Every structure is written in structure tokens, then in C-alpha cells.
Image 1 (cartoon, one colour):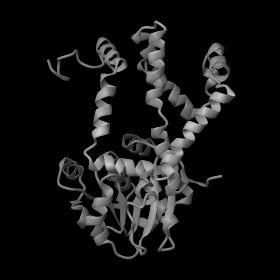
Image 2 (cartoon, one colour):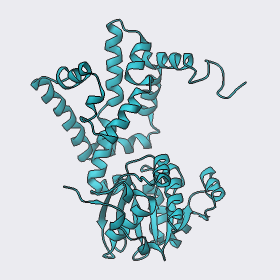
Image 3 (cartoon, rainbow, N blue to C red):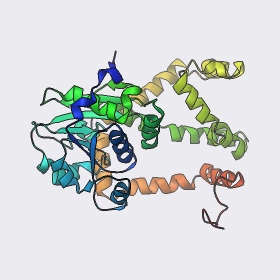
Image 4 (spheres, helix red, strand yellow):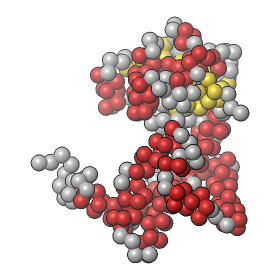
Length: 337
């Protein structure tokens, strides 16, 4: 069973004399920088000169180049995208590292796939919020916090875990629970959640119900366009996936628990499909495919994105959202008039 740490397990005092460098001022970077500053810690931002750097200055942070921040800070929160980090690390961060600095990753990806290989004289840890940046900030302000996965990959100082917990506390996660994990586990679970096909399963269901004569409006409202799914997701979070079932009618409960079951043969086929997804991740095939896609300029992604946005379901979705007043009428710019 995974260890879970809370506020009483963490000591912010370990960071009181350390400068924390937040590398990247995007959604996560901004939220975590604010939370750390509000926790009474010394925070600076490392970012290239762009709109994000300007926003950080407006928010009252000292903003340096990534290389300058890496040289100045004792603890570095690496909050730039996975696909950009290897080059930035090699060119701007790695050369500035000195013994006993701490590298805090928010994703296991680059360590797991060895696309970033830190020197042996630094601590390498993981604090990976299971929450978007907006929720990281709101969880801190509300006092409820949010859960994170944490891990220690390299403990040069002998204090890597206490420092990890201090960072988790500083951003507000030990109020929601910092769950001990590993870089490998975080990567596998995160990628699997993105790869197992939720969006395509909804689209297949739409296509089958259209074949059965159901209207696009009824199907879309049933699956997500009504907002009911947001309330169900809240119930999953607050009560639990199966314990929320009594909130539904008995007909609904029977359908979800009995009718929706796969046959043993179908169940094994689906498990085999899911195992192939895991194997694609753990073998490194996905990482190689994604790297090649980036190097080629994203041709497959661009082609599929265009196809997906032209699919009849999305065409009908846009029509419905216009009729409901959620997006402007076709040809009218948002905010015009």
C-alpha cells in the first residue's frame, strides 16, 4: 500500500534559506510559484522573454533567464513541457548545476525514458500534482489542497524525501495527500490515461446511436453536453466510483452494473487491448514515435486533428452549442457586438 503524507509529515523550515526557481511560468508554473510565495518561501522565475515572463513580472516575481535561474536557485521546479525540457536542460540548466541542488520534476516522462540524465551530485525528485494549474491555485486558497504523486529518483543529499515533502507542502498538496510513487509509475499511469481511448469511445457510441435513429442533440446531451457528467465526476471524487451509484435510479444502476458487463470473451479482448497500450508505453515505442512526430513537424497529429474536428459529431456539437448560446453564431467573432 502506498504511503500518503500530509501536512504534519512535512517541514517548510527545510526550505526557508533556499531560493526556489520555478522554471516555466505556464499554468502549473504560475500556480505553484504563487503558492510557494504565499507559503513564505523565496521564489524566482526562470523563463525566456515572452508573454509568460511579462506576466510573471506583473505578478511581482523576479524573472531571470532559465540559465540564470538555474544558477541562482537551490531548488528547481521544472515546469516546462516534456517535449521541450531535454533541449532546455542540456543547453541551459545542466551546465548551471552544482552539488546539492534539487531538481523537482512534475512528470516522470523524461527521467523514465532517459531523455534527461541529471548529474549524480544533485537530488532528483518528483512532485506531480494530479490537478490542472487552476485547481492547484484554487486548492491552495481554499485550504483543501489537492493530491500529488511524489517520488525520489536520486538522493545525493540524504534529505531528498524531506525536501520533496516540503515542496509538496509549499504548493498545498500535503493538505490533499502526497502519495509515494515512482517516476516510472507516474509516467505509465499518466500516459495510459491519455491513450486508452475515452474520446474515441464516446464518438463510437455517438455513431451507433445515430445509426439507431437518435438525434445528435439527444446523444450529445446524454453523454456530455448537458453538464451532468461534471456533477457525476464530482460524485466520483467525493464518494467513489461505485459508491456514487445510489445517486442514480435503480434502472440506471442495473444497467451500469449488470447490462454493461462484457462477456468473458469480450472482457479478455478488452484487457488484451489495454495490455498492448501498457506495453507500448513501457517498451519505449510510444516515446520514440512521439519524438519522431515532433521532429517531422507533427504531420500525423495535424492530419488527425483536422479529421477529428470535421467529424459529423463535432459538426453537430458546434451547431448545438451555438443554439444553446455557448459559442457565437457561425461567422460572428467571440465578443463582437
